Length: 175
Image (cartoon, rainbow, N blue to C red; front, side):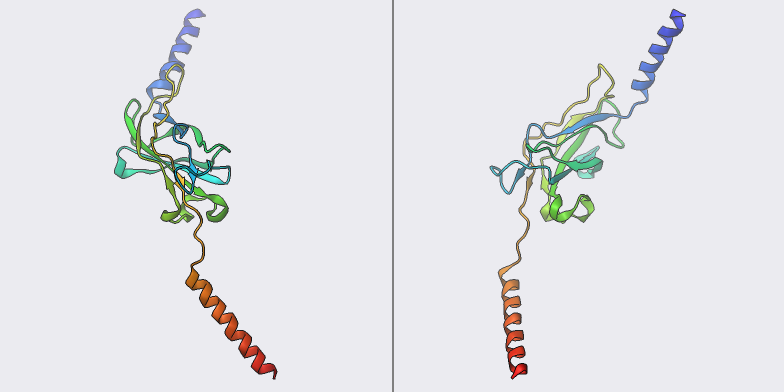
């Protein structure tokens, strides 16, 4: 009976680590997300984030879920896998952040000039099975979410002239 118990334990540990996909913990704890500028306020729960990952810096693609930040500018997702990167190899990762109140929660609907980006960091992928813990990427540059663009002065001037013209037209028609 004891032989079967030991064999089962070894089999479970071996199968979990031999065929496992490499994982990392997606977090920006070292470079928290800011709003507007490098010394701006920390991001809140209305700021969404999405990790990008790939085997080299030029082939980054979305990995893991897109979720909201915590109230102190921290983004964290546990156990994100990177396709085409095996266990115990380095993957390249980046965090994108955007304002979900204006652009929604889907990364595809966000213009590229409205994305905050961290620097691209390398991270060692592990199995994530105890005692082989998953690693955090070491970002040095925080994602800075740009402010929402305001309407231009020229567009407001055109609208004001249009309203003025309509007022004159309505005044002449009523006489």
